[in-house]
Image (cartoon, rainbow, N blue to C red; front, side, top):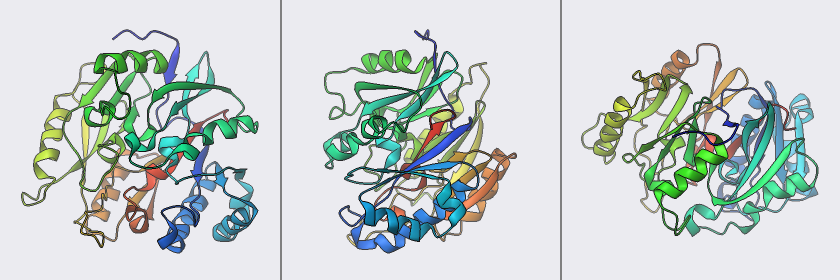
Amino acid sequence: MPQTNNRRLLAEWENQSAVMLTWPHDQTDWAWILGEVDTVYGEISRAISRHERLLIVYRDAAHKQHIENVIADSSAIKACVFVQCASNDSWARDHGPISVMQQGKPVLLDFQFNGWGGKYESTLDNAISKHIHDQGIFKCVFNTLTLILEGGSIESDGVGTLLTTEQCLLTPTRNPGLSKSDIEKILISEFGLKRILWLSEGHLAGDDTDAHIDTLARFCNPQTIAYCTCDDTDDEHYTGLKAMEKQLKAFRTASNQPYTLVPLPIPAARYAEDGRRLPATYANFLIINKAVLVPVYDDSHDAIALENLRTAFPQHEIIAINCVPIIKQYGSLHCLTMQLAAGVI
């Protein structure tokens, strides 16, 4: 797959100017657990602020004051850039802009967001990135595209390889009329890719994104992939994750070497009150400048996941964030955040 322009889709471990958060409020689906979720957002914000800035989307003046009270740390608040904007929900990973480099400068790509194939109302969220741009917050070129694409559905190694899942990108409710080949051509062009690695196996129960890659398998560096594993033959994930592992073992790096694979055991099953399984996953970590924020779940597997990620990121501080409240809305830490490249704000 020859790349067709001089863009480069950044890896998450590259230098960042900020992380974007769209803060929950009482008009979102978070209302029933807003206090718990605010606590997690405050912890995430304080952790990020020690390493880089935050771009925080808030609803109104009272909401902004509430956010500052939750963060409750003057130095962390000073690291925040606040922008007022209406929102449907809080999954910045999927409605936020995607950073690429072009001719040595950052460019933001604003793809369309339709609520994961029309599952949820998303009109307000789809307009957030453009609204931030219109406020003059972004200090770089900003391009709006017609393709429907969520940040959680793609993983980049920073050197031309994209990792993704067929189940998500080929869902007909996202880009009807586009074939796999059509989508590949667009991604190669917009991201300057050399190749795309497609996973056809792997899915977490309770995940309503149609198998976002950031719940399943993540690049740690161009030669290393951390991925969800399941060794319990009685668990509903066993067969699918074993099949995914087989695919990952068959993949090769750009230099035709096997990937170093870092296993992340899935946490023990947790269920919502309606009986639906919650999609807890350690793969939903966030890489920031000199640190990795890792979701944990008061689970016996937490320590194993943290230790394995310390091995994968020896130069980074590993910071555990309790995300039990977040999975109650069927996402986790990485889903809430979107990193912005150096030079964006």
